[in-house]
Amino acid sequence: MELEKDLFGKCPYTTAQKVLSGKWSIMILYHLGIKTMRFGELQRQLPDLTQSTLTKQLRALEDYGLIERTIYPQVPPKVEYSLSDIGIKFQKVLAELAIWGNDYIKTLQKKEL
Figure 1 (tube, helix red, strand yellow):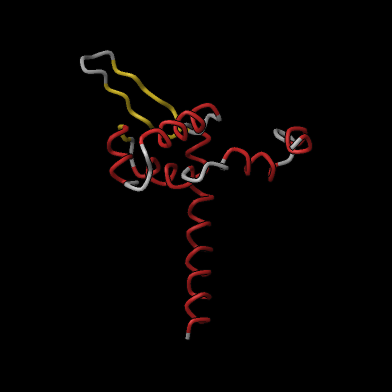
Figure 2 (figure 1 turned 180 degrees about the vertical axis):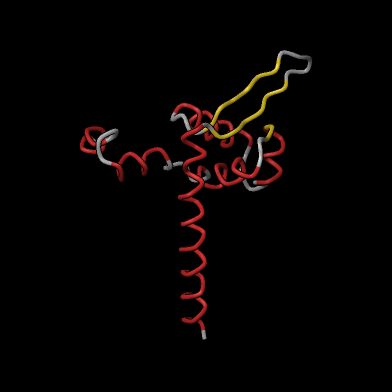
């Protein structure tokens, strides 16, 4: 663990692994890459995710600077989540992950034959 702390912010792989360590981080970033969403919208997109876990994941992604939370001063309060500039840059990585994921799925399917 100490080595990981020493490498965070220095090693790109350690840094990326730490920032994306939440089980749902990638899926949240994927959905926010489609459009800005409110909490309830995100929860409907990820029905297996509990409210408390979604809250924790959103806070972590906000702390790491990948997403932004906008609070509108109205009653009832309106809060929207969107990608930050660095979160938008991550969309290129997500696109490559989708390509790799599809290739991997094809490999698995060939093994099943």
